[in-house]
Amino acid sequence: MKQRLDRDTMGMRAAKELKDGDCVNLGFGIPTLCALYVPDGVRFETEAGLLGYGRLVMADEIDKADWHYIDASGRFCTPAPGMAIFDVVTSFAMIRSGRLISIMGGFQVSERGDLANWNTGGDALGGTIGGAMDLAVGSRMVIITMEHTTKEGKPRIVKKCTYPLTAKESVDLIVTDLAVIEVTPGGLLLKEVAPGWTADEIQGLTEAELIISPDLKEVEL
Amino acid sequence: MINKIFAGFDEAVADIPDGAVIAVECWGYPATPHNLIAALKRKGTKDLTIITHTFIPMVFSEEYAALPAVLLPQMKKLISPIVGIMRLGAGGFVKEYVEKGMEVEIMGHGTLAARLYAGAAGLGGIYDPIGVGTILEEGKEKRVIKGKEYLFQEPLKPDYAFIAGHKVDKLGNLVYRGNYRSDQPVMAMAAKVTIVEVEQIVEVGDIDPEHVITPGIFVDRIVLIPPDGLGTPDKGRAVIEQLTQIESVRDLLFGKAD
Image 1 (tube, rainbow over the protein chains, first blue to last red):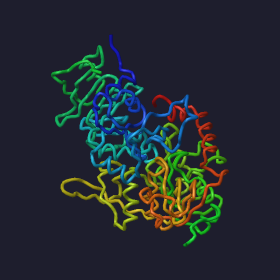
Image 2: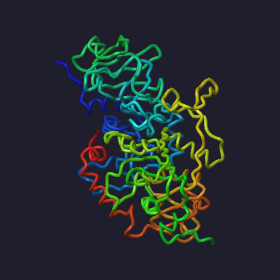
Image 3: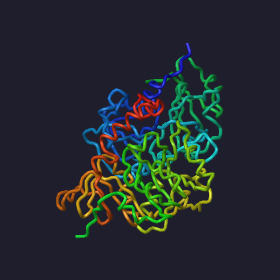
C-alpha cells in the first residue's frame, strides 16, 4: 500500500542526517519537528542569538514563557545548560562561515539545487527573507523538508524555480513526503522512496529529471 | 559625570527631527523598545526612515505594546529583512503606504547586521555573497572576487538607535537579557545617538566589567521603564493572551509545528 510520510516522519528522516556535535538552525514548520528526533549532542542555533537552547514552549505552558528567550520564528524557548547568548554579528558569522547545518522548508527546489523558500508572490513584499538567504548560502549543509507537490498537485522539484530565489545552488538534500533526494553535481539523485512508491511514480510527480540510485531503497528512519 | 538619565521617554526623543533615520530592534513583542516607539508616535515626527529586523503588523493592542509598525503613517522609508508575517499576508499590510510613496528596502538579516557594522566601523560598504542570483541583485554593483560573485551593499549609519536593555549603569555600560541582545549592540555602535529603555539602572561599579556587552561610550540616553510602562511582564502576559486569540499566530508561536 502506498504511503506518504506524515510531517513528523519527515522531521524524523531529516533529523537522521544529524550526529553528535552538529549545530543546527531549524526553520519554520516541519524542520521544527526535527528537534524531537535528533541524537544526543546536537545543539540548536537561532539567528536571534542563541546556541544550545532547550525545548520550545508549547500551548499548554504559555504562562511559563520567558520572552527573553526566543527562536528565529519568534517562538519562546527555554534556556539549557551550556547555552551561549550572542549578538547578530556573531550569529551571522556562525551561519556564514559554514559551521551550521540548516534545515528549512521550501516552496521549490531546482535540479541544480536552487532554493525558493521566501516568497510565493511576484514582488518584494510577497514574502519575508529573515535569515533564509544567509542560511542557504552559508550553511555547511542545507536540508530542505517540503511536500513533494503543491496542494494542486504540481511538482515542487522543478527544472527551474518560478518563485523568487532564496539562493542559487545551495540545497544538499531534499526530504519530501515521498522521497529523499540528494543534489549532486550530476543532478538529482533519488535515494529513498516512501513505502509502496516506485521510482517511476516519483519521477511522474517531479518536473526535474531524477537519477535513480543503484541502491534505491524505502525511506529509512 | 555627564547625566545620561532622562526623566521620561518623551524627553528622550524630543530632539528627533523630521527625516531622521532610526534603528529599532524588534522580534515581535520581545526585544522591542516599545516605550521609545510610543513616544516617537506621540511626538509625530515625520518622514522617518526605520531600520528594523522585524516589521510586522500590530496584532495586539497599543495599550500593551508598540511595534515599529505604529510609526507607519510617519514613515518615508523602511529598511528590513522581514516585512509582515507570511501567514498574515506578508508585506500586504504596508502596501497602502507604498502606494502613497513610502519606500521599502529588503535584504537578508545577516546583510542588515553587516551593513550596520560597516556603518559603525566607518567602512565604505561590504561585498556580500548573500542575494546573488536573487531579486536583491537589482540595481546593485556586482563584483567577482577570487572567482566568487558578490553584491555591493552600502553601510547603514542611523541617526538614532532605540534599544531595549536589561541593566545599565550610570555611565551607560549595558547588559541585555537573553536574546534581547541580538541586533542591538551593532545598532548602538552604528547610530550617532543611542537611546536605551531599560529595566534597571544601577550605580557605576555594580556591573562586572567582564559582563558589559555594550560599553557606555555607545549609550547616550537612558530611560528607566516604569512599573506601568510597556514591555513589562504584566503587559507581556496581556500580549500573549491576545496572541493566543489569533489561531494562526497561536499555532506559529505555541503549536507543535507549523
